[in-house]
Image (cartoon, rainbow, N blue to C red; front, side, top):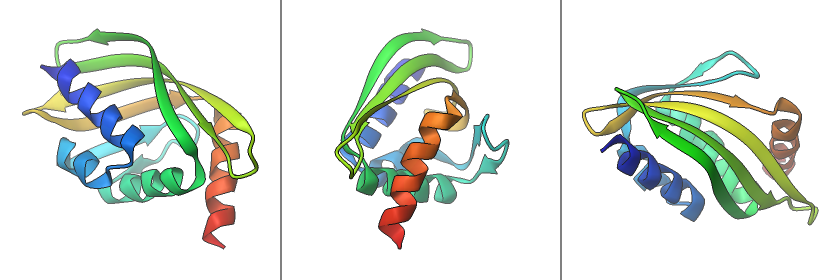
Length: 128
Protein backbone atom coordinates (compact mmCIF):
# COMPACT_ATOMS: atom_id res chain seq x y z
CA UNK A 1 0.00 0.00 0.00
CA UNK A 2 2.73 2.52 0.94
CA UNK A 3 4.67 1.82 -2.26
CA UNK A 4 1.57 2.63 -4.36
CA UNK A 5 1.18 6.01 -2.62
CA UNK A 6 4.87 6.80 -3.09
CA UNK A 7 4.77 5.77 -6.76
CA UNK A 8 1.75 8.06 -7.34
CA UNK A 9 3.59 10.87 -5.53
CA UNK A 10 6.64 10.69 -7.79
CA UNK A 11 4.51 10.28 -10.92
CA UNK A 12 2.62 13.46 -9.97
CA UNK A 13 5.85 15.40 -9.44
CA UNK A 14 7.26 14.11 -12.70
CA UNK A 15 4.13 15.14 -14.62
CA UNK A 16 3.96 18.56 -12.94
CA UNK A 17 0.60 17.91 -11.25
CA UNK A 18 1.14 19.97 -8.10
CA UNK A 19 -2.49 19.54 -6.98
CA UNK A 20 -2.12 15.75 -7.11
CA UNK A 21 1.05 16.09 -5.02
CA UNK A 22 -0.88 18.23 -2.51
CA UNK A 23 -3.62 15.59 -2.30
CA UNK A 24 -1.06 12.88 -1.50
CA UNK A 25 0.42 14.84 1.40
CA UNK A 26 -1.11 14.70 4.89
CA UNK A 27 -2.09 18.29 5.79
CA UNK A 28 0.54 18.40 8.56
CA UNK A 29 3.29 16.66 6.58
CA UNK A 30 6.90 17.71 7.15
CA UNK A 31 9.65 17.63 4.52
CA UNK A 32 13.28 17.70 5.70
CA UNK A 33 16.47 17.96 3.59
CA UNK A 34 19.97 17.08 4.72
CA UNK A 35 21.57 20.10 3.07
CA UNK A 36 19.70 22.81 4.98
CA UNK A 37 18.39 20.85 8.01
CA UNK A 38 15.10 22.76 7.80
CA UNK A 39 11.66 21.16 8.05
CA UNK A 40 9.35 22.46 5.34
CA UNK A 41 5.57 22.56 5.45
CA UNK A 42 3.51 21.16 2.60
CA UNK A 43 2.92 24.64 1.16
CA UNK A 44 6.63 25.50 1.28
CA UNK A 45 7.49 22.24 -0.44
CA UNK A 46 4.84 22.72 -3.13
CA UNK A 47 6.33 26.13 -3.89
CA UNK A 48 9.76 24.51 -4.36
CA UNK A 49 8.28 21.77 -6.56
CA UNK A 50 6.49 24.39 -8.69
CA UNK A 51 9.81 26.18 -9.16
CA UNK A 52 11.44 22.88 -10.07
CA UNK A 53 8.82 22.34 -12.78
CA UNK A 54 9.47 25.80 -14.22
CA UNK A 55 13.28 25.48 -14.14
CA UNK A 56 13.76 21.88 -15.29
CA UNK A 57 12.47 20.30 -18.47
CA UNK A 58 12.25 16.59 -19.10
CA UNK A 59 11.97 15.87 -15.38
CA UNK A 60 12.27 12.13 -14.81
CA UNK A 61 12.86 9.92 -11.77
CA UNK A 62 14.97 6.80 -12.20
CA UNK A 63 14.21 4.55 -9.24
CA UNK A 64 17.37 2.69 -8.25
CA UNK A 65 15.84 0.77 -5.36
CA UNK A 66 12.75 0.91 -3.22
CA UNK A 67 11.85 -0.97 -0.04
CA UNK A 68 8.72 -0.87 2.08
CA UNK A 69 9.19 -0.45 5.79
CA UNK A 70 6.58 -0.87 8.51
CA UNK A 71 5.37 2.70 8.07
CA UNK A 72 6.62 3.88 4.70
CA UNK A 73 9.13 3.49 1.92
CA UNK A 74 12.88 3.87 1.60
CA UNK A 75 13.85 4.93 -1.89
CA UNK A 76 17.05 5.66 -3.76
CA UNK A 77 16.65 7.49 -7.06
CA UNK A 78 18.27 9.71 -9.65
CA UNK A 79 16.40 12.81 -10.79
CA UNK A 80 17.15 13.61 -14.43
CA UNK A 81 16.36 16.79 -16.30
CA UNK A 82 17.58 19.69 -18.38
CA UNK A 83 18.33 23.16 -17.02
CA UNK A 84 17.34 26.32 -18.94
CA UNK A 85 20.97 26.59 -20.11
CA UNK A 86 20.46 23.32 -21.99
CA UNK A 87 22.71 21.43 -19.59
CA UNK A 88 21.52 17.96 -18.60
CA UNK A 89 21.82 17.10 -14.94
CA UNK A 90 21.42 14.20 -12.57
CA UNK A 91 20.64 14.52 -8.86
CA UNK A 92 21.24 11.41 -6.76
CA UNK A 93 19.05 11.15 -3.67
CA UNK A 94 17.76 8.79 -1.03
CA UNK A 95 14.50 9.34 0.83
CA UNK A 96 12.49 7.92 3.63
CA UNK A 97 8.79 8.62 3.03
CA UNK A 98 6.52 7.92 5.98
CA UNK A 99 2.96 7.04 5.00
CA UNK A 100 0.07 7.46 7.44
CA UNK A 101 -3.59 6.85 6.63
CA UNK A 102 -2.84 6.61 2.91
CA UNK A 103 -0.98 9.93 2.71
CA UNK A 104 2.63 11.00 2.97
CA UNK A 105 3.21 12.32 6.50
CA UNK A 106 6.97 12.93 6.47
CA UNK A 107 9.87 12.94 4.06
CA UNK A 108 13.53 12.82 5.05
CA UNK A 109 15.58 13.52 1.92
CA UNK A 110 19.31 13.01 1.57
CA UNK A 111 20.76 14.46 -1.59
CA UNK A 112 23.88 15.77 -3.30
CA UNK A 113 23.81 19.42 -2.20
CA UNK A 114 26.19 20.58 -4.96
CA UNK A 115 23.82 19.28 -7.63
CA UNK A 116 20.80 20.67 -5.82
CA UNK A 117 22.40 24.12 -5.85
CA UNK A 118 22.45 24.02 -9.69
CA UNK A 119 18.69 23.56 -9.70
CA UNK A 120 18.21 26.23 -7.05
CA UNK A 121 20.21 28.77 -9.07
CA UNK A 122 18.14 27.99 -12.17
CA UNK A 123 14.87 28.41 -10.20
CA UNK A 124 16.05 31.72 -8.74
CA UNK A 125 17.15 33.03 -12.15
CA UNK A 126 13.67 32.40 -13.51
CA UNK A 127 12.08 34.17 -10.53
CA UNK A 128 14.00 37.41 -11.24
